[in-house]
Amino acid sequence: MENTSLNISSNASQSPTVQGSKASSKRANQWLKYSTTFWFLAVLAGQWFFFYYIIAFYGFSVINNNMEIWNVWEVFGKTPYKAGDFAGNAAFAAHAIGAGVVAFGGALQLMPQMRRYFPKFHKINGYLYLLTVFALSISGFYLVWIRDQHPITLDGIGTSINGILILTFTYFCAKTAIKKDIRNHKKWAIRLFLVSNAQWILRIGVFSYLITGTTMGLAPAFGDPFFPMWTFGCFVVPLAMAELYFFASETQNQKVKWLAAGCLCVLTLLMLVGIVGFTPFLLKVMSGDAISI
Image (cartoon, rainbow, N blue to C red; front, side):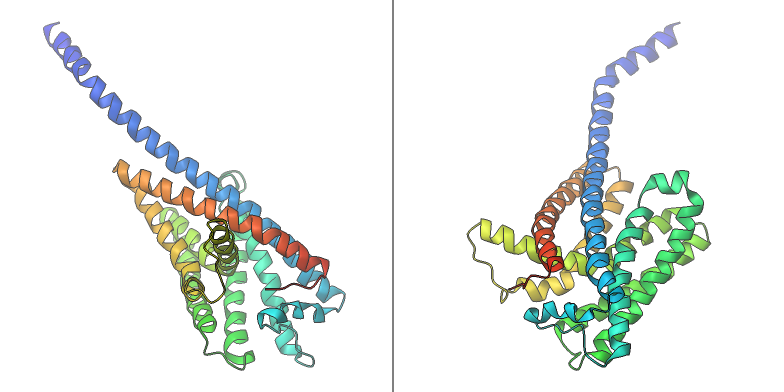
């Protein structure tokens, strides 16, 4: 009885500190989870609207044999459609529509409910996703280094590095899936999702910069240093955030968890600003109206 009383007394004396530490750790884990959910919902909304835009604009232009409409982007110095260039036009169409498939299918792969309740669909969709991003990367190399008459540009270099990362992450994603290394497979899948959607991130980042800069009275312009930096930042920043998230998920350090949750919330808010600005712009493109810088 004495030993039991001593143990109870000892546990009672330690409980406030222990309970406080556990409660603080629980809050940190919860906020990391909340920030992740916040990010995913924002990505899901933005990606699926982007999928709708790609099918409505590029998909139907191919079906209706109206690919000349792609040159609405000439105001930005881009000429996607070139008369008489069947191979180049086909490669661009496949690349653009493939990006839509990646936007739609990739988001499904990140849903834990899909992995849990529909494992066969998750597996089939996963392999289709890997094949699509592989083809997307190869077509990207073709468009930059063969079709483009001036491939040695900052955009071309950034796209090429991003393509190499896609191929590398595709390999490791498939390898870990085959070995049933689920823990590392999830990490490689997230990395692959981020780099395969880098062009979408690039665009919403541009709109976020222009909107936030204008709101703050900074008069942002296309000649700002942000734009060449964001050519690489569109995949470097998301990957850096992903690594911080992985570390925070596995460490017991609460400060790291709070830091990761805070950074993810801030980046998600900036992403939402970009999505809000990018959406009406895409609607204008789909309407057929002239666009301007």
